[in-house]
Length: 204
Image (cartoon, rainbow, N blue to C red; front, side, top):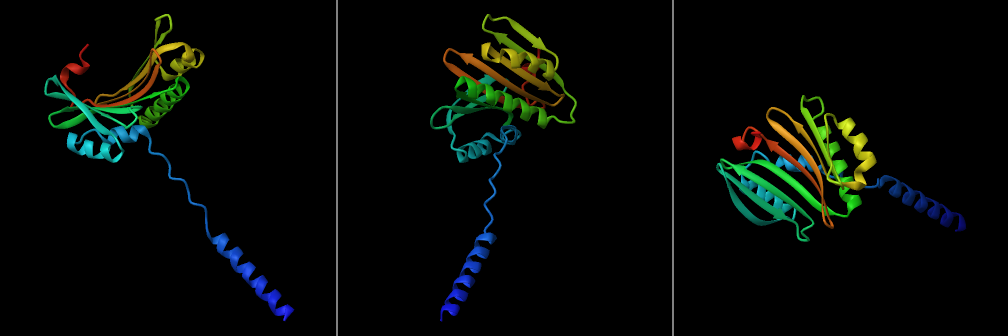
């Protein structure tokens, strides 16, 4: 009887072990990059863009006509900590900008993350580059490459009033920005389809 009981216990233990072994831990779902989100909102109608934004828990706030058949739309999340702005022309979104209001450290981290996403998006593509930084004394520095910008930024980032990077191509533009406004620290990333933009937008 004892022997039979021991065999049953051993068999049950083996069965339990195998069933636990078969259950693999769930793989985490990778977060969607912000550059992927904003580019997905460009080239579609305002109505389709709004459906997407509402599915991401963003609410329509306001719109404004800017001339040249250009309309601006604003959407915010419930806490107003992040927002999307869209520009529409000829019934098509050609510009999408995402921004968020964070603590200084997080805003700087997100600016860096957005810039990395922009560089990855433009990998193997030809573009022109412009970097800009304004320090607490309102001295402006400009940069011709991302590497030179990052050398300056790494040393000065906690003392900056603002900084930005622009990657320009014939038909598109990716831009990132960090701005300090009193106690507000905002990080931005934007994408523009230049083929649908208002002509005056890129006139100097």
